[in-house]
Image 1 (spheres, rainbow, N blue to C red):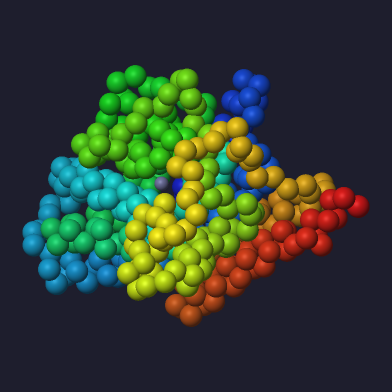
Image 2 (image 1 turned 45 degrees about the vertical axis):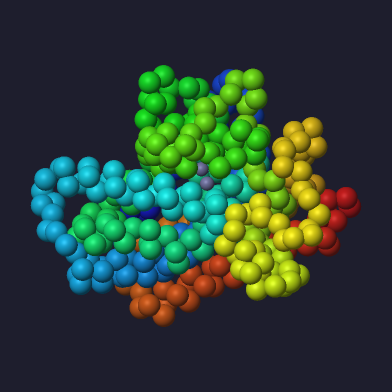
Length: 357
Ligand SMILES: [Zn+2]
Ligand SMILES: [Zn+2]
């Protein structure tokens, strides 16, 4: 049974606790449309990754079987601790590559698409990262760590990262020295100059300190969340694919094969020769958070759709073991299509115009 079947209710509980604490403190850390979008992106990613993840695990299993160098005693806790530390090390490189190689950024950008920072932001997981992420963990397979160890530490690493998405927990003393915390992860989600390409760690921040990508949060300049090329959409499917379209568009308009390849494999900030220069500095006074007018009924419909989608996901995670691969693929594919269509409808000018009626 999927561990996320248990994790998802805990995530919702954490969101509820954060909402309650924010209410008590009189601060607003959630916006309705943004939160629903985060939840919908999370649901879509779960539907896709049950299939994408299965492919990754199958690849890992083949590699362990054929090339695994050592046999590990899984009754020894040290095996699990070592696997977790190594996994976290490779996660650092997965994540760093996801920021520093444009085609991989296309997969990861959805995690940074929120201009808020709260527990629901953590639900913005990529639906398209599965095709390359497993490659970074091949060394674990070559070392012979069994599939169940790999899967367990992968879930621990991901679930750990949920609670660090909050503005309500301040700095955490000596823990800041070696752990990923809400404070240093806020920096990771910031678009201020000092935040760019910093704090890639999953559980441990020591990798950032070792490889020169660590930055502390500044009290004099709190992070402003989001990305410099904003998504400006509430569509969970478009949120996952929009940067792929942007890359292809840029490559088609760029002359020369070398430059075309650079569009895919250079950093996201790379510009073709002759392209108009883009300001390298964040201009906080020009930043406006994305919002669209919407009548109350539309919010209620969106909320109902989000709740129904979450319940269908829970059913899918619960029942999928009994599905054939075709049924599993059809269910997931249909859900992604429905989410894409609903997201498109939500943004349709005719519907948005209803706000002014
Ligand atoms: Zn990131
Ligand atoms: Zn994050």
